[in-house]
Image (cartoon, rainbow, N blue to C red; front, side, top):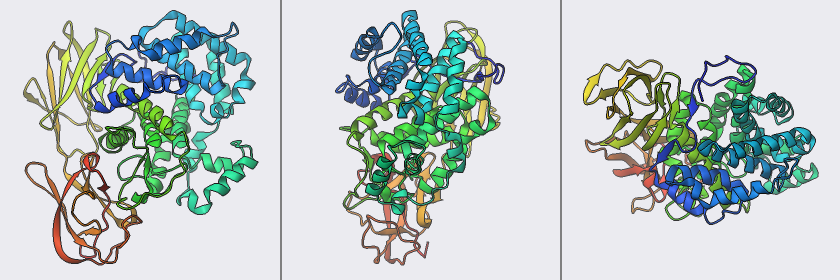
Length: 555
């Protein structure tokens, strides 16, 4: 697919950069293999199929041979002559999205015709489609599909469906611009009472309590970001295009998690580190941030990928709720009986979206946005480039493979946290002019060229909830492991130090009045005793992380 300048064609904006399609990237992240293995245990659930196939494209040599494709083809074979598919409308949308993921890989015209037939049915039965609550409150799911199909087919009827959906679906743009819930909703209203009020409203999004629930729910808000992004690219509306950043900044200000993402059970739970972080919410936010294609979103994604996401996709099972600073008994969460399956679905889709946006395709050449280890095939006007990304001694190494030499411009994203950036090509340093947090390399690329990028990651102490301190080096959050023998009721009293080998220690003192370390951290507590120098580890490596420290009065 050729790229065109943004805003060139109305009403659907053409994109300045495209994420890679299914089959154009491979990943070596172990979390993806674990998630795919877990998804294989419940392959009959249609809601998992898109995430399963996109994950298979990242970890399997022949994804078309995987069981999920057979199940998908069987479901498509039951399509009625009218275009209707089995299941609820939301399930039909899920099946169509999965079918589109497979079409990205094999460009099978028969599958494209089945999707077009379903869109014709949706147009004829629009009232029934919109009667499905999930379609109304998550319009981004269907909107993304319609826009993608329009870019392929150019059918005007698809644009008409987009107009209807944008006008009649939930207005997430206004929600994101006006988000003002500073306190956790559960402090305002018991969950059981909220559920009773929602039942009286028949859970219709126009009802006060149902809307309150939806607009304070981590996953729905994340899906609302994708809805605003897609609607903005359809309409060119500046309000819709700016809503994701505005909403993210407001939500994280009041409900941000130190390990990335936002805290929340079924509703946002506030910024306290003891509030917990749900895996389903993390996956949903990863997918949404990956759809934005802006520097601030990649900064947020880096923190997710380095900290919370790998913990959620645990070595043995999905950690549905991460306990941060939770060294005692776990609190009770309202997460729903379907949480494990929902978490699996959101994590697979989130990880797949992150992988597909790590390197994007521009008319001038590839853009490296996230330095995730793997292989990326980037189509270009003069031929395709295969980029192999790996990490070696703290440096990012990009090896270029091309059949014939050609000129292209490679854009390298410079993270916001980086203080110094060094770039070398084939071992020779280059003058890397950093403009707007990016480095551009315009040259004739030969097969085997190697680009090495290094960023300085100074140790930072950032202020968090209750004037607490979180310690970061680059995007990596460092924590004290409460599973060790060190005391847990401590406050930071001084500045952490990193030695020449990258080991980090923090000076702490005991907080005698802080007896219950499962609750909120105290504000500027009294400390006593000698200063202890405790070793810190990356958040993802800590079994029971204490990642937000109160600051002692002596700090």
